[in-house]
Length: 218
Image (cartoon, rainbow, N blue to C red; front, side, top):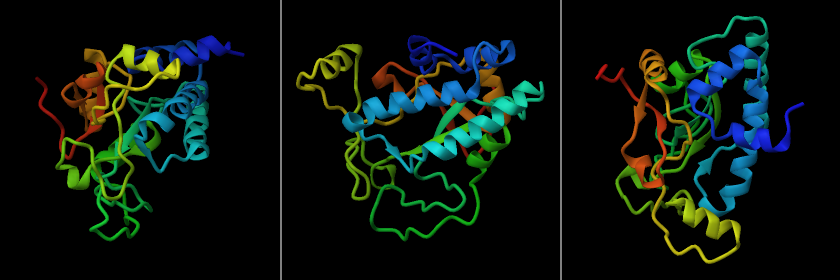
């Protein structure tokens, strides 16, 4: 049984370290998913960055991934790695509001290619994330979602933990704590997902971001 402290640290591991840990059986995709969900539970009331958060579905995906790793047969290059998918990338059975109340919220008939490639690679889809109306405003304002806020810095995070007033309220553009190595970036390219360092740089983090086509190798 993994300790509470060790479980908390799992949410901070890179995708590369997660995959290496699965191979060594140092921890499991279920333990990682639980750690990520605990982190979301801790910070979501302050940040409001998630949408369609379904812990049981995420854990079911993680259990399936765990079984594959125990059999020594991971499904793909991202098997068991937790990911989030932006509101504007369609996922089967879910509405795609594009961050606005101006569009219909009919369930999508199928996964968009980026979401489909991530699932085929074995990624654990933890939730979808919010966005401003049509993704057009850097303010983070949305007529559909709550205002998403960016923690901005470790100092801001410490202020939140101590219950102090959160002074910096920059909008959240992307949320992810994994910093992929070159090997993982290569895996992402083959899975149809891009490694982005632009918007998440506001929070000093990196993200695996789905794209409509494979990004360039350089």
